[in-house]
Image 1 (cartoon, rainbow, N blue to C red):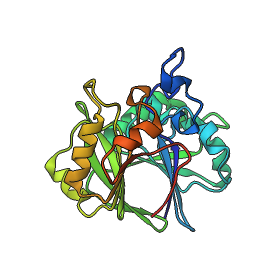
Image 2 (tube, rainbow, N blue to C red; image 1 turned 60 degrees about the vertical axis):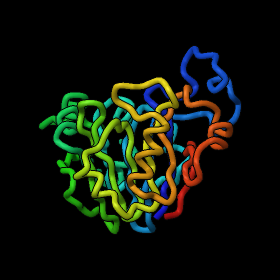
Image 3 (cartoon, rainbow, N blue to C red; image 1 turned 180 degrees about the vertical axis):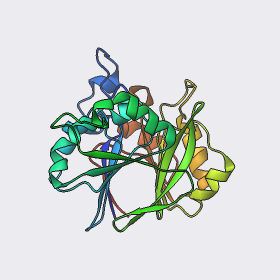
Image 4 (cartoon, one colour; image 1 turned 135 degrees about the vertical axis):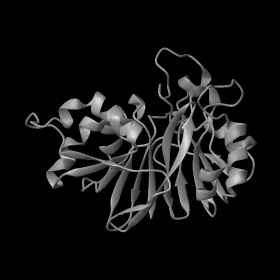
Length: 253
């Protein structure tokens, strides 16, 4: 299974518009972060996790072939704002979108024209499917286990694919959901920045503690804002087995 990081940034992306900090002024490509999204692929199946407002830019360099399903973590704009841009992929047929009840409701409100009874010609051919934490399902040859985490007070979905798990926007997790992650070898989890607390996002120390609780051999941090620091400098101070992900990174699981 191949994982491609299409974006590893938070809602504002990096560089932040108008910011003159070291990170935003960096010319290092690993300090440029589009909004969070990944591709999960096997020889037979291709899944997209979230389609944020940078989706068009992110997908253009990728081979043009069918997307078999889109997994939504939650319906905030930085995670679903590019859903309309999947239209070219609908020439391969309808695309099923999977979301929990809260995200499903949010998408119906945000993109009503995509789900109207009499749809305007040319809108994306997408179908919303409701999923629930702890209830595994399969798309093609990939089994997916949704895991509920808390984005502040809002329940959202993380996803486990065998020995790999992907979580963004988490602040806390219930022990019952943490148990669903036992045995994960490679973990991707959000880490907004180092020190200044946030009401709905983990900091780097929180993410490291979480990785230890999961017992993952390798942990990659994502959903990072410019305050986290320069990619190369931060990687030098992270504990063994923990590193920053970056846009364009490819993992073979």
